[in-house]
Amino acid sequence: MFSYFSVFKDESKLDINYVPPRLPHRKAELDLLNQFFRFTIENPGRMTQRVLIVGKIGTGKTVISQSFGANMTKQARQRNVNLHYVHVNCRECKGSFFMILQRVILRFYPNFPKRGYSGEELLQALMQILDEKKAYVILALDELEALVQSEGSDPIYSLTRVQEERAETAQRLSLIGILREMHHLDKLDPSTRSTLQHNIVHFKEYSKPQLRDILNDRITWAFKEDTVQAQTLDAVAEAAVSEGGDARYAIELLWRAGKYADTERAKEVWPEHVRKAASSVYAGVRKDTLAELGLHEQLFLLGIARRFNLTDAAHITMGEAEEAYAIVCEELGEKERKHTQLWKYAKLLSVLEIIGTQPSSLGHRGKTTFISLPTTPASELERELSRILRIQAT
Ligand SMILES: Nc1ncnc2c1ncn2[C@@H]1O[C@H](COP(=O)(O)OP(=O)(O)OP(=O)(O)O)[C@@H](O)[C@H]1O
Ligand SMILES: [Mg+2]
Image (cartoon, rainbow, N blue to C red; front, side, top):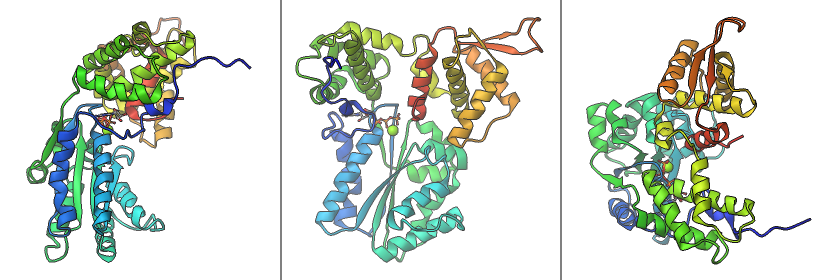
């Protein structure tokens, strides 16, 4: 067996779920969160708090909230306060209030029966459990959009009111809502919205020097010494700034550039590797465009990308696209949209120039529409959509 030189010493430090020990340029935001929740360790039970974290993709909302939670519970332990930080991703819970509450309760009672309760009953059960255990919870609802989209105001209304109905007892449940854009809350009724809007922590997009600092740490931890040149770091930061100051993109691009260097058996990572890596990420389609599509538009496109990955053909039929979409929906437990709706998606994706659509020629059996992928490699599209949807690429 040959063993080739690799520029990496520990690729896991570039993994999407890796929580780094240091989070440069978010101190002010962390301090603010600590301020908002200081009472939970100083005066637990006296009040509750609701805070929103709002910022674009890859601005560190999830990682900062988790790191805040870890630090807060550690401090609480030192003071013998039974505080728990529970981080739940609403999209992973398919926007279901029931599933979200279930996850929280399972943290306390792993054997809690999975059936037989309504969302409202689960919430009451949770409050009872917290009373019994004399526990306090900071519940972080990540990707809150998903919950609002699927269930509207009711869950958040219940969560914010459940304490007020218990004015005589200890206040146990605080909330952090995490979302990309405020406008997702437009759907909420005005009073629920206003209770949430008191404390907002805005996460700005990272600037180039900030991204450079974030990347620098990762280079130290993930790459062998002196394998990544200063100008390479600069090229990655530059590219990530033009992608909207997205740290996730920056870290992924760095990793890919390293992969290119390894493939070429280079001893160092150069800006050319970054350029290659960057141009291989959705050559024709801007990332924002994909991220801003609706969930089922993304799922439909993912089906198309996967189908193209399995074929050398220049186009697939609308029927094949629908089949592929159905498989994606089944895999993710999503309810399929109807044929007429899929037509609208195809039309939209074609207007956005992500796919091409063309009626089949007369010779083709039955009349259908052919779908092509004119500018973007299917594998890149699949990868990017999987990244946005946070699912494992096939
Ligand atoms: N200040 C930072 N220092 C170090 N790494 C960071 C920092 N901010 C973000 N990251 C890293 O960048 C990536 C994206 O961060 P994160 O997942 O928290 O973004 P997000 O704002 O939650 O994005 P999304 O809206 O897509 O959920 C993660 O790998 C995270 O570890
Ligand atoms: Mg996040």
